[in-house]
Amino acid sequence: MAEAGAHLTSTAVNEQPSIFEVLAQESLMEAVRPALRHVFKVLAQSNPSCFGFLWRRFDELYMLLDVLLQNHFLSNCSASFSENFYGLKRVSDGRGLTAHLGLCRSSRLRSLLLLFLVPYLRAKLEVTLAQQREEEDFSIRLAQTRNQRFFRAAVAAYPYVSSAWQAWNFCQQLLFVFGVTRTHSPLLWLANVRLARLNTQDLREMELNISNTQKPADGRQLHVCVRFNAAVISQS
Image (cartoon, rainbow, N blue to C red):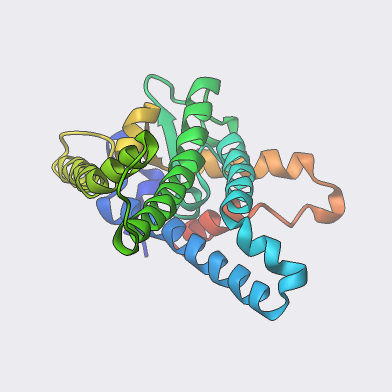
């Protein structure tokens, strides 16, 4: 347990997380969307008149929830929800602010935009291309309009674009493992931020900040991000 929490008192050299930590936080967010989609589907099937709109507008509702959640954690913990869950924070180049102060405005806006917009656009694009692919397979068109030719070209090019993105992501992770780059993801590189581990000062000041904004009766009810990471210190 001492090794698990050793990074909380280490120097800046050891603040960079391991590849296992960054991949674990990514898998957490990737699991949330399918789970929530299944819940919405069950509700829609059980009572279509009341909950059918949840299923029809799932992508938009999920995007709204994602924006609110990610904006809260970026503003208060300098990290996305999954990053903070694993005791990580985002750090702007040249800025050594503690986590409770949040990112600078430009880094926060870029991070927020990439966190919610890229998954939303990718989901909508995959649905649209899947529908177009089905139309191409089961329909006969003697003449095609410009839009139809564009979608046909997009359907044909999408596998190559997706493979190129995955290859870039893999190369970025490989360079991160060997210490060539400090970001494991192209999205972090585009946002001009990197991931670092939370330290004791971050947790102490985040806990103090939350305690000052809460009522006395709720003084012991700390934010989940603080309680989860503080438990690591006590067990270490």
